[in-house]
Image (cartoon, rainbow, N blue to C red; front, side, top):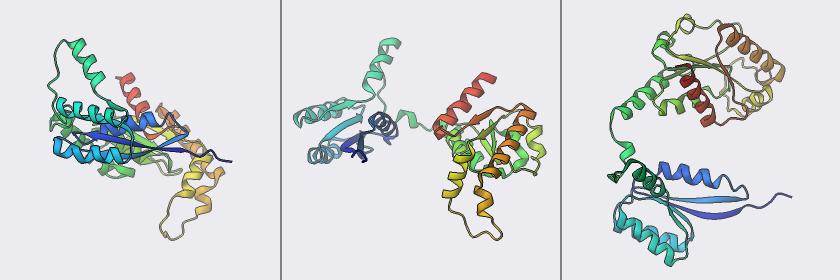
Length: 273
Protein backbone atom coordinates (compact mmCIF):
# COMPACT_ATOMS: atom_id res chain seq x y z
CA UNK A 1 0.00 0.00 0.00
CA UNK A 2 1.40 3.40 -1.01
CA UNK A 3 2.05 5.98 1.68
CA UNK A 4 -0.21 8.98 1.28
CA UNK A 5 1.59 12.31 0.98
CA UNK A 6 0.89 15.18 3.33
CA UNK A 7 0.09 18.30 1.32
CA UNK A 8 0.91 21.72 2.71
CA UNK A 9 0.69 25.29 1.46
CA UNK A 10 3.97 27.01 0.58
CA UNK A 11 3.68 30.76 0.07
CA UNK A 12 6.53 32.41 -1.85
CA UNK A 13 6.63 36.23 -1.79
CA UNK A 14 9.19 38.10 -3.88
CA UNK A 15 9.79 41.71 -4.86
CA UNK A 16 11.39 40.43 -8.07
CA UNK A 17 10.71 37.48 -10.38
CA UNK A 18 10.71 34.90 -7.57
CA UNK A 19 13.15 32.55 -9.32
CA UNK A 20 15.59 32.47 -6.40
CA UNK A 21 12.78 31.87 -3.96
CA UNK A 22 11.15 29.11 -5.99
CA UNK A 23 14.49 27.28 -6.27
CA UNK A 24 15.11 27.56 -2.53
CA UNK A 25 11.58 26.43 -1.65
CA UNK A 26 11.70 23.44 -3.96
CA UNK A 27 15.17 22.43 -2.79
CA UNK A 28 13.96 22.38 0.81
CA UNK A 29 10.64 20.67 0.03
CA UNK A 30 12.44 17.93 -1.91
CA UNK A 31 14.07 16.75 1.32
CA UNK A 32 10.67 15.75 2.72
CA UNK A 33 9.46 12.95 0.50
CA UNK A 34 6.40 12.19 2.58
CA UNK A 35 5.09 15.71 1.98
CA UNK A 36 4.25 17.75 -1.10
CA UNK A 37 4.06 21.53 -1.36
CA UNK A 38 1.15 23.38 -2.93
CA UNK A 39 2.99 26.45 -4.21
CA UNK A 40 1.52 29.94 -4.16
CA UNK A 41 3.92 32.34 -5.89
CA UNK A 42 3.55 36.12 -5.54
CA UNK A 43 6.17 37.93 -7.66
CA UNK A 44 6.85 41.68 -7.96
CA UNK A 45 5.40 42.56 -4.53
CA UNK A 46 6.88 45.99 -3.85
CA UNK A 47 4.19 48.00 -2.04
CA UNK A 48 1.98 47.56 0.98
CA UNK A 49 -1.06 47.74 -1.28
CA UNK A 50 0.24 44.75 -3.27
CA UNK A 51 1.17 42.87 -0.11
CA UNK A 52 -2.19 43.12 1.70
CA UNK A 53 -4.13 40.67 -0.56
CA UNK A 54 -1.18 38.27 -0.35
CA UNK A 55 -1.38 38.27 3.45
CA UNK A 56 -5.13 37.70 3.22
CA UNK A 57 -4.52 34.69 0.96
CA UNK A 58 -2.04 33.30 3.48
CA UNK A 59 -4.61 33.73 6.26
CA UNK A 60 -7.13 31.72 4.21
CA UNK A 61 -4.64 28.95 3.40
CA UNK A 62 -2.03 28.88 6.19
CA UNK A 63 1.31 27.24 5.57
CA UNK A 64 5.00 28.05 5.35
CA UNK A 65 5.92 31.52 4.12
CA UNK A 66 9.24 32.19 2.42
CA UNK A 67 10.06 35.62 1.10
CA UNK A 68 12.77 37.69 -0.54
CA UNK A 69 11.82 41.31 0.06
CA UNK A 70 14.58 43.88 0.53
CA UNK A 71 12.30 46.68 1.78
CA UNK A 72 12.57 46.63 5.58
CA UNK A 73 9.04 47.89 6.22
CA UNK A 74 7.46 45.25 3.99
CA UNK A 75 9.65 42.52 5.49
CA UNK A 76 8.68 43.58 9.02
CA UNK A 77 5.01 43.63 8.03
CA UNK A 78 5.22 40.08 6.65
CA UNK A 79 6.85 38.85 9.87
CA UNK A 80 4.36 40.66 12.12
CA UNK A 81 1.27 39.44 10.28
CA UNK A 82 2.57 35.89 9.97
CA UNK A 83 3.34 35.84 13.70
CA UNK A 84 -0.20 37.00 14.43
CA UNK A 85 -1.52 34.18 12.20
CA UNK A 86 0.81 31.64 13.88
CA UNK A 87 2.36 30.99 10.48
CA UNK A 88 6.14 30.47 10.14
CA UNK A 89 7.91 32.99 7.90
CA UNK A 90 11.51 33.14 6.73
CA UNK A 91 13.32 35.94 4.94
CA UNK A 92 15.46 33.66 2.77
CA UNK A 93 18.13 36.18 1.80
CA UNK A 94 18.53 37.96 5.15
CA UNK A 95 20.98 35.49 6.82
CA UNK A 96 23.05 35.52 3.63
CA UNK A 97 23.01 39.33 3.49
CA UNK A 98 24.08 39.59 7.13
CA UNK A 99 26.99 37.22 6.48
CA UNK A 100 28.09 39.28 3.46
CA UNK A 101 27.82 42.54 5.40
CA UNK A 102 29.79 41.18 8.34
CA UNK A 103 32.56 39.81 6.15
CA UNK A 104 32.77 42.77 3.73
CA UNK A 105 32.30 45.40 6.41
CA UNK A 106 29.78 47.34 4.36
CA UNK A 107 25.99 47.49 4.20
CA UNK A 108 24.17 46.25 1.11
CA UNK A 109 22.48 48.70 -1.27
CA UNK A 110 19.27 46.62 -1.02
CA UNK A 111 18.35 47.00 -4.68
CA UNK A 112 15.26 45.11 -5.88
CA UNK A 113 16.05 42.65 -8.68
CA UNK A 114 19.74 43.52 -8.68
CA UNK A 115 20.61 40.10 -10.12
CA UNK A 116 18.52 40.86 -13.21
CA UNK A 117 20.36 44.05 -14.19
CA UNK A 118 20.85 44.63 -17.92
CA UNK A 119 24.63 44.37 -17.71
CA UNK A 120 27.25 42.64 -19.84
CA UNK A 121 26.61 39.33 -18.08
CA UNK A 122 22.93 39.50 -18.98
CA UNK A 123 23.64 40.15 -22.65
CA UNK A 124 26.25 37.36 -22.66
CA UNK A 125 23.52 34.94 -21.53
CA UNK A 126 21.21 36.14 -24.31
CA UNK A 127 24.00 35.69 -26.86
CA UNK A 128 24.71 32.20 -25.51
CA UNK A 129 21.03 31.26 -25.75
CA UNK A 130 20.80 32.48 -29.33
CA UNK A 131 23.92 30.54 -30.29
CA UNK A 132 22.70 27.39 -28.54
CA UNK A 133 19.27 27.43 -30.18
CA UNK A 134 20.89 27.95 -33.60
CA UNK A 135 23.25 25.01 -33.01
CA UNK A 136 20.82 22.46 -31.60
CA UNK A 137 20.90 18.87 -32.89
CA UNK A 138 23.69 19.37 -35.43
CA UNK A 139 22.40 22.58 -37.01
CA UNK A 140 24.86 25.15 -38.37
CA UNK A 141 27.82 22.86 -37.78
CA UNK A 142 30.32 25.05 -39.63
CA UNK A 143 31.22 27.36 -36.73
CA UNK A 144 31.73 25.11 -33.71
CA UNK A 145 34.94 27.00 -33.00
CA UNK A 146 32.78 29.75 -31.49
CA UNK A 147 31.26 27.36 -28.93
CA UNK A 148 32.39 27.05 -25.33
CA UNK A 149 31.02 23.51 -25.09
CA UNK A 150 30.10 20.95 -27.73
CA UNK A 151 27.90 18.08 -26.50
CA UNK A 152 27.68 14.84 -28.49
CA UNK A 153 25.70 11.68 -27.82
CA UNK A 154 23.22 9.23 -29.27
CA UNK A 155 19.53 10.05 -29.38
CA UNK A 156 17.77 10.70 -26.03
CA UNK A 157 20.82 11.45 -23.86
CA UNK A 158 19.51 14.90 -22.78
CA UNK A 159 21.78 16.87 -25.10
CA UNK A 160 19.31 19.68 -25.85
CA UNK A 161 18.04 20.44 -22.32
CA UNK A 162 21.60 20.32 -20.98
CA UNK A 163 22.71 22.72 -23.71
CA UNK A 164 19.92 25.17 -22.90
CA UNK A 165 20.68 25.00 -19.17
CA UNK A 166 24.35 25.81 -19.85
CA UNK A 167 23.35 28.65 -22.17
CA UNK A 168 21.33 30.15 -19.32
CA UNK A 169 24.64 30.25 -17.46
CA UNK A 170 26.18 32.21 -20.32
CA UNK A 171 27.98 29.22 -21.85
CA UNK A 172 27.68 28.93 -25.62
CA UNK A 173 26.77 25.30 -26.20
CA UNK A 174 26.25 23.34 -29.40
CA UNK A 175 25.10 19.74 -29.60
CA UNK A 176 24.91 17.10 -32.28
CA UNK A 177 23.86 13.46 -32.46
CA UNK A 178 26.19 10.50 -32.80
CA UNK A 179 24.82 8.14 -35.42
CA UNK A 180 26.64 4.89 -36.08
CA UNK A 181 27.98 4.82 -39.61
CA UNK A 182 27.63 8.59 -40.07
CA UNK A 183 30.95 10.43 -39.72
CA UNK A 184 31.14 13.54 -37.57
CA UNK A 185 31.48 16.85 -39.43
CA UNK A 186 35.07 17.94 -40.00
CA UNK A 187 34.30 21.08 -37.97
CA UNK A 188 33.98 18.93 -34.83
CA UNK A 189 37.38 17.30 -35.25
CA UNK A 190 39.01 20.60 -36.17
CA UNK A 191 37.53 22.58 -33.27
CA UNK A 192 40.17 23.65 -30.74
CA UNK A 193 38.28 26.06 -28.51
CA UNK A 194 35.23 24.16 -27.21
CA UNK A 195 35.22 21.45 -24.58
CA UNK A 196 33.77 18.40 -26.35
CA UNK A 197 31.81 16.11 -24.04
CA UNK A 198 30.03 12.84 -24.75
CA UNK A 199 26.79 11.99 -22.93
CA UNK A 200 25.73 8.39 -22.40
CA UNK A 201 23.17 6.47 -20.34
CA UNK A 202 22.24 2.85 -19.81
CA UNK A 203 20.47 1.11 -22.66
CA UNK A 204 17.49 0.50 -20.35
CA UNK A 205 17.17 4.20 -19.57
CA UNK A 206 17.48 5.28 -23.20
CA UNK A 207 14.98 2.66 -24.32
CA UNK A 208 12.52 3.85 -21.70
CA UNK A 209 12.88 7.49 -22.76
CA UNK A 210 12.54 6.57 -26.44
CA UNK A 211 9.41 4.54 -25.69
CA UNK A 212 7.80 7.55 -24.03
CA UNK A 213 8.74 9.94 -26.78
CA UNK A 214 5.88 11.24 -28.89
CA UNK A 215 6.93 10.44 -32.45
CA UNK A 216 5.59 12.11 -35.54
CA UNK A 217 4.33 10.08 -38.45
CA UNK A 218 7.66 9.53 -40.18
CA UNK A 219 7.56 7.28 -43.20
CA UNK A 220 9.60 4.11 -42.78
CA UNK A 221 10.31 4.71 -39.09
CA UNK A 222 10.98 1.48 -37.19
CA UNK A 223 10.07 2.09 -33.55
CA UNK A 224 10.99 -1.44 -32.47
CA UNK A 225 14.53 -0.92 -33.81
CA UNK A 226 14.72 2.54 -32.20
CA UNK A 227 13.85 1.20 -28.73
CA UNK A 228 15.58 -2.19 -28.95
CA UNK A 229 18.05 -2.50 -26.06
CA UNK A 230 20.55 -4.56 -28.05
CA UNK A 231 20.59 -1.95 -30.80
CA UNK A 232 20.99 0.84 -28.26
CA UNK A 233 23.87 -1.05 -26.63
CA UNK A 234 25.64 -1.07 -30.01
CA UNK A 235 25.01 2.65 -30.42
CA UNK A 236 26.50 3.29 -26.97
CA UNK A 237 29.50 1.10 -27.75
CA UNK A 238 30.14 3.14 -30.88
CA UNK A 239 29.77 6.43 -28.95
CA UNK A 240 32.18 5.29 -26.23
CA UNK A 241 34.74 4.20 -28.83
CA UNK A 242 34.44 7.52 -30.63
CA UNK A 243 35.04 9.52 -27.45
CA UNK A 244 37.95 7.27 -26.46
CA UNK A 245 39.56 7.73 -29.88
CA UNK A 246 39.67 11.50 -29.49
CA UNK A 247 40.10 11.55 -25.71
CA UNK A 248 36.79 13.33 -25.13
CA UNK A 249 35.38 13.02 -21.58
CA UNK A 250 32.16 11.05 -21.08
CA UNK A 251 29.37 11.75 -18.59
CA UNK A 252 26.82 9.09 -17.71
CA UNK A 253 23.47 10.88 -17.33
CA UNK A 254 21.46 7.83 -16.22
CA UNK A 255 20.95 9.01 -12.65
CA UNK A 256 21.76 12.67 -13.13
CA UNK A 257 19.36 15.57 -13.39
CA UNK A 258 19.95 18.15 -16.12
CA UNK A 259 21.36 20.48 -13.47
CA UNK A 260 23.81 17.83 -12.24
CA UNK A 261 24.98 17.04 -15.77
CA UNK A 262 25.52 20.75 -16.46
CA UNK A 263 27.43 21.14 -13.19
CA UNK A 264 29.70 18.25 -14.16
CA UNK A 265 30.42 19.93 -17.51
CA UNK A 266 31.17 23.25 -15.79
CA UNK A 267 33.57 21.42 -13.45
CA UNK A 268 35.33 19.86 -16.45
CA UNK A 269 35.75 23.28 -18.03
CA UNK A 270 37.34 24.66 -14.88
CA UNK A 271 39.60 21.64 -14.56
CA UNK A 272 40.86 21.89 -18.14
CA UNK A 273 41.55 25.64 -18.08
